[in-house]
Amino acid sequence: MMAEPIVDVDENLRLIGTAHVATASVKLVEEQIDEWKPDIVAVELCASRYSALTQERRLDQEGLLKVIKEGKAPMVLLQSLLAAEQRRLGIDEGQQPGAELLAAVNAAKKCDIDVELVDRDIQVTLRRAWKKMRLRERFKLIWALLSEDDDDEEIDLETMLDDKDLLTSLMEDLRELSPGAGQVLIDERDEYISSKISRVRGKGRVLAVLGAGHLSGVAKNLATNNGYVESRITKLSEVPASGKLFKTMTWMIPLAIIALLGWFAYNGDLAAIKENGIYWIAGNMIAAAFFCIIAGGHPIPVIVAALASPITSLNPALAAGWFAGYAQLKIKEPSGEDLTEFLKLDSVKLFWTNRAGRVLLVTALTNLGSMTGAWIAMALIAIGL
Image 1 (cartoon, rainbow, N blue to C red):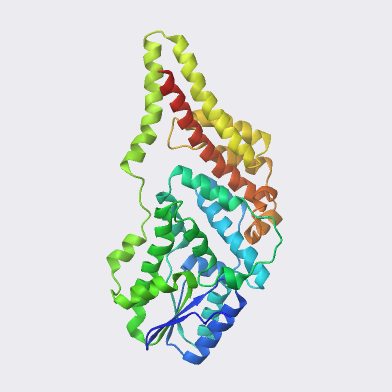
Image 2: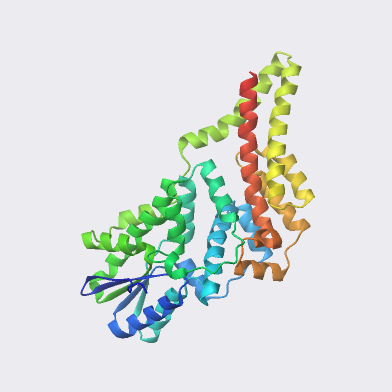
């Protein structure tokens, strides 16, 4: 049996590292609040995650459509995939992910102890990580998360989560794949959490309940006593804008295609227009349709993806996935039961079997396919020049 993951930074600051899916962690948190009697309980939660744990989460047609329109499908997809894996293990342990964090909040409120939420907003974290990842890294990440192991072998949580929570364990495994994303998901959160704890550190005895994967990093940061720096917290809470090079490339590709075809037309080279036009249309149509098929799209959204991609790739303000996802939403309209079941997402298979999940998958993968097709088409055109 592993030792209790407790670190006393000083006599007034104690950290507890928990496995987000372990029943023992819930019991440990409750015991520590009862025995140590803190003045403040700090928990590794943001406001949105806290609301998800304490309030009934709802998803409706309007909400799903908003996700598509605002281009948030990849973020919801990534968050749901990570949550599904945690939830699968949590069910095996008899606890839902975050149960020990909610236990900390409830126990603190029962004893009339102040609660501080010290984690960064989950959407900001995921968006910062997504921005740090290259295109091929995004493909690999989605593929790894979608490649669910069907083996029913019993999972030894004590061995697997000996000193880290599942999310951190997954991200540490992906550090080699994307060091930037690993930095955002682990190192930045360590700094953010420790800084928020420092903000309340002088107000009495503070008991901080964290995922065990953050225990050593947060403890190290707090030991240096850097304190709370508002400007740094603000910086870590920003979603970085796309770089100038990326924005330039986003517009340069369609402008280059239009200029090239215009040049051929000016010179009366109809054969070149036809040949390069075929490259552009075929590359976009095939890639977008193929990825939509992988997502399990209905034939009509597949056709919509194929027809939209050559056009949307010429306009960075549009995305083929938006149209394919909307078509999927209308053709295979999710029922209220589908929308409720999706929020429980205890298996990544639901992205194909659940109508709401499939809408998100069609939207996200069609966008990736369209982007891939545009680059392939540009490469073919460049080779032919």
